[in-house]
Length: 276
Length: 318
Image (cartoon, rainbow over all chains, first blue to last red; front, top):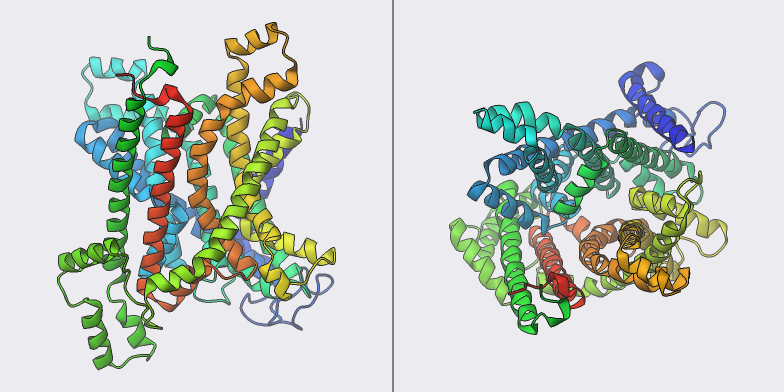
């Protein structure tokens, strides 16, 4: 019962922030960048969540922040899943030297932890939200390549794939028609984990002040801004911090739920073990 | 079948040697990837100095020559590798100091934080993991496993801020207090908590696996109590994976220190990295990434070797 309620709450939160991200301009008439009131006003009447150091409405900034934070996380995760998944599928299906080369490259890249890989790319490309998305996406790709390869491999080794091969089906047909759909559940739960990681990564990098533009309404950047006024106005950091945390927890909870429900748990664990 | 204890020690040496060679190769690959990625993606590191008006175009040309950026890429790469072997990582674009010295000055701060964080992670993870095994799964609130699950997901930036808030409200310290900057307790707790979840889950999984093993039944038949059974028989086989996890966590901790150092305004490698990226101080950033890749590779080799020593089943049989 408890678990069910948690899953429902997680889904509810995610639906809420997606809706908020979609309709942010309709939900608030204020401008997220322009001051509207006195600086550091506490939450309460007038300004729902209070104002920041420049007197900007925090509720408005949170609403617009949902937009920027979610889109950055989604784009970064898609990049990692696209590149990593393609490499993982190629490795699992081709075998031979292609597989060895891909695994070797992934392992070499994994010698640099994901966040550091992203920081390294940022060092090369310079700060900014766009480069952060690119860096987190590329930084997550090698890990996803390794995990998805394990998932594809276990789908490839099932009897129906052997049967399809025996019936004379082509490699590409088997890959797209049999292996990918049957690794689907595992991939979905790996993808949710990837999104949680990408979301954490992008907000962490913006928290470190690497977004370039400090007035950007983005949860990580707002958390960083709140850090400076932590003692006299803790609400500046609490709202974005809580929003980031709730989002990551919700995504992870739903990911676990998907894995358990579709009985993909065993496959996923196998994939994680083969990948780690 | 050869019994594990009969396996020759020579097997251990060859296996360890193979891991070391593997690590050397991976380290070389990681360092090369760093070099080429930074060159291709970054273009001209001197350009940022020009753009900020910190150098005239003649000075920039001189700097390019001095950094060897006018040479063909392959020659730059050879020079870079040669310098690396000699322990020379170039000089900062801003202060002109050797990168090795700049990094060396910051290492103690981060090493202290990472070591303390690792200690917290292991202690907390061990306790949470053992408690989680003992928990009744049918009960509605599995507290220890819940906490272990949440620990990994919570962003360090937020737990750090919550910890500071809690500390100030309890009247322990103020953020601007220099004692707070120097104190290790709170940052280590925040950093360690983030890694404790992974340790706990690994211990829980390992113990649950061994609980089903025949030797557990044998231990029970011999009349061993539940406590010693859990702690000695079930926990011991669960420990080697934790050691290899520590290697992964060591790298994760480095990522965590970047955030922790920012949250607590501590000096260290993480702050240096963020600062060098924001400034466009290319040699410093490159040196830091190279350092972390090497540390990561080394810790993996060390963990693998330790695993071989602890668990004879991993050694080759021939």
